[in-house]
Image 1 (tube, rainbow, N blue to C red):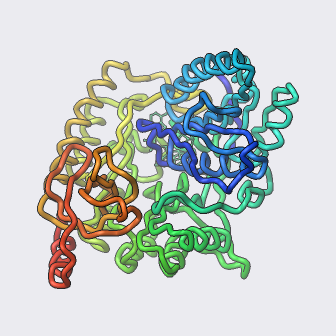
Image 2: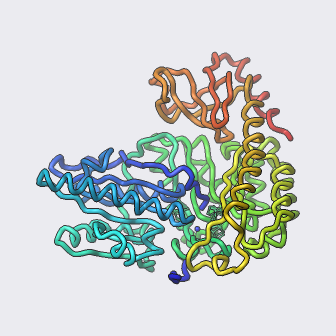
Image 3: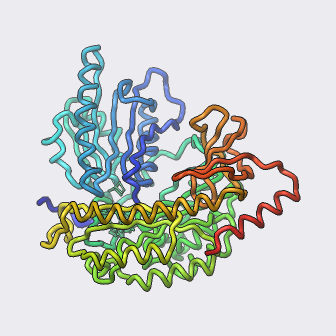
Length: 492
Ligand code: SAH
Ligand code: SF4
Ligand code: F3S
């Protein structure tokens, strides 16, 4: 088993590995090279992929939409579960064939592996995938332009350091953002060491960006038209940024300062750990209208014995009390969570405690996973691993319950009106897609000129994962009524 460096975490959504082609990018000379970045894993990787593309812009790299056209292909990878990590190797096989096709046309392609697999596996990647020339970790990708020069000179290069000076200080200032809703990483790494999790090893120790750096980035984004910001961190609610005057800012204080930036109309943050949900942050949900009524708060397991073995630092009763306090502060808040089934030693009785927590809370949406033993983590070495068939059966039962809760939450929205930020073109012509305050995707019949606007939408239909709606006529009386309806919507 490979040991990883014990350094520094995410809400992850590896189930939905996104392909990001950062279309952002300062104008570059047309003679320049091209880069394609593919993203796996959590939102932090989505943010990193954008910054990877931006870091290459000053060296003349222009982002392109497909790997076929790229001089440099970067796979920004995720190591959270075995499946996520293995996906990278099958993709590398495909990319290598594309490179052969380019070589037949007299062009070349440099292949780089970035992200959490790069950090965890390091040199081993060269051994398993000989086409790879660059391996670069999540804290050192600002060095990609230099690594690229070495790769072009024919040298394989690896940089998986955790530099003392953060990448944020070295990266070029962000260009004009492409979308009205954007991510902003404020905290990285994790010191919690849950026994199942690779993040403390792949991302390094917990680290908070200074408030002035975050506020500067948020202000520039707002000036460029960003209306919704999601603050990111593997443990974002452990944020403790040191200001120039020596004071230490909590996430609540940071949210309040960002809420005051003109143009920022909606705020979110993810992912939070229950043990770091402090009183001032809970109060922010009551006091900050721009803070959206949605919270992703993983609980992982409902059995106290399993929670202790996971090193989660809370019991099921602690979690339920916390949910009560959050709901008291912000009635109607929509909740989301992460759950693992089949952690070593989990019995049927333990698993029933997980179902009971889900029943007690009532989630608007959730992510659930079969436990995947990860190299170098303490839980992988436990002897009482749960058979895969048992994990699958528990996951099925859990997902049936979660899907029913999500469907009920979605169908309760029909007939209600919400403000929707129209973020992108929809799948059908004449449709734009955005998110409700509760994070649901909403497909709205709307003209393209409304892209980037926040509109008042009446929900006409609900599906398993999304809603459909039409724009309300904006008379004053109607608006007032709709807002009232929205605030009544989710008191449970
Ligand atoms: N920082 C967040 C979550 C980080 S990882 C938190 O503390 O809650 C995202 C999710 O992946 C976790 O919440 C967990 O549910 C899941 N996960 C992490 N390691 C896993 C593993 N080894 N097997 C299965 N799921 C895992
Ligand atoms: Fe992983 Fe636990 Fe850290 Fe979350 S808190 S990133 S699950 S170690
Ligand atoms: Fe995110 Fe996956 Fe790394 S969840 S932090 S990209 S291991």
